[in-house]
Image (cartoon, rainbow, N blue to C red; front, side):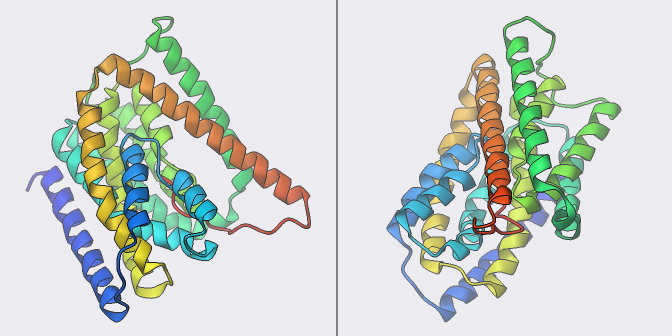
Length: 302
C-alpha cells in the first residue's frame, strides 16, 4: 500500500473511533446542535483552512458571547473542530502534490512530539518560547517578503526536499509537536519554513493539516470519553466546519502562486504579532501577583 494511502487509512480509522465515541456521548446526553456554533465553526474553519488558525478568534468569540464556561472552551473547541480538521487533511493530502516521504515523516514527527510534549511542556519556559518564535516569524516573514520583491533569492515551486532539508523539517515538526501542548501553533512556522526552503507554499498545507488532524483526533477521542464539554456547541461546530473547509481549499488551489506567496507573508506576520502579544500578556500576569493564573497547558492552536 502506498504511503499516502496508508496514512489516510489510519486517519480514517482514528476518525471513525472518534465519531463512535462522540455518538455514545450524545446518546447519554442528547442535545440539539447550537446554531451559533454552526456559524462560528464555518467562519473560523474557513480561515483555519487558509492557514490562519481557528482557536484564537474562536476563543475570543466564545468569551465575548459567554456561550459556555471558560473551563469548557478548550475541550469544546478540540472536539467540535476535529471533523473540520480531518476534512482539511483529506482534502489537501489528496489534491496537492507533495513528496510522500516528507509528508509522512513530518506528520509522524509532529505526532510523536505532541505525545512527548505532555511530559516535557510543563517544564518549558513558555514566555521565552513565545517571544523567540514571535521574533523569528517576523524576521522570516520579512525575508520572504524581500524574496517576493526579488531583492533576495528564495521562493520556489518544489514539492520535495533534499535529505538535509527533509531532516530539518522533520526536526522542526517534532519540536512544534511538543509546543502544541503549550498552545503554540504550528501552521505559520511550517508554512514559512517550507516556503523559505524553496517549496511551493501549497505543499505546506497537506503537512500542516495532516499533522493537526492526527493530534486533534487523538486528543478529541480522549476528551469526549473523559472530560466535560459543551455538547450542543460541539454538535454545531462539527456541522458547520467541513463545508467551509471545502470552500477555502478550493480558494487555496485556485490562487495564483504569486498571490499565495504574499498570503504567506500576511499569515506569518499575523501569527507573529499574536505570539508576541501572548508573551507580553504572560509577562504582565507574571509581574502582577493579583492577576489570575492562566492554565498551564492551553488549547491546541494549529
